[in-house]
Length: 421
Image (cartoon, rainbow, N blue to C red; front, side, top):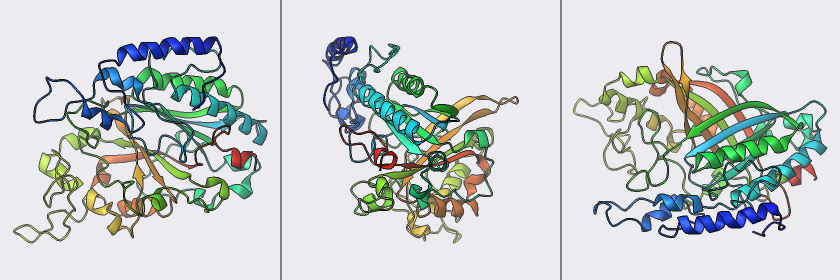
């Protein structure tokens, strides 16, 4: 990535890099591969039966690239802190204003992901930190195309999601013209990005909704592992993996796909799923595991083995009943139970305080990525809607669907092929 033109801000950047070099001298500098690489080095005092955790001094050095084939924030492991935010174009803003905004936003994202200050009036919130794995991802909602006069370029895959019987959606916290996903392994870095993008937007857009989430920090566990959600369950076990031959076609629009401006892009389904934790936590462990179809301790299927062991759907107990209940969440969501439908889930937990009765307003900011939501998210959610044991303990309260174009080439901005095509 090229360095920005030297300015007063770049002088501060040099000092930040020197600081990083000092802070990370005893740790392992992580590359774009993420926190897992950090487990190769660590402290001599770590338990001998576990790989040592990532040294904290190395967290800030993790850097994701902005100019990549697929936008950042899709293939990277989910970071410790996130902000999901949607904007609507302001009255009077159209295609020209949207293009100018995406150009400005892309410039800001590129600089911040490199650990540089924002180009205008940087607040210095992240001055002492490195990139910290920051990623910024941009997407377009259904109505964006109407407001910009680009209806003919709106993908068929962006048609509104069907209604589900379990939905209790709040209109004000759903959808939006423009969607931004921010993730970082340092909370001030994530907030700094959110604030910089909001300020750079100016009068072109109005805030529609904002949600903040979190995950475990890299190095918090003795070994790399799937994250646990707020129900205490291992989450994301059956995610498609880049090593699988059909991964690309499941997650990304092909280079010759339609519309052409979506080449190498993906579709993000965003759902705010509240967990009814008081009800869930009153369930005995055995009943919790029956609802999920997996052991709580390690995420292994109830049919036996470890977390990644193939689930045996035919295995029965001594009384002839399926070991994995027919309505278990893990059984219902399997691709082979949904015509091969699969999506790459990259979610965050959230906690937004407590209700008047003391119940936590907490749950999952569900984000799934797929080449076509009608072949990814929708078939699975329809199946869950018809008889998932977990449905009694969750509530879908907000929803959005966004077209996320491929990554921007150097010298270009995200969405340029759409807005200038």
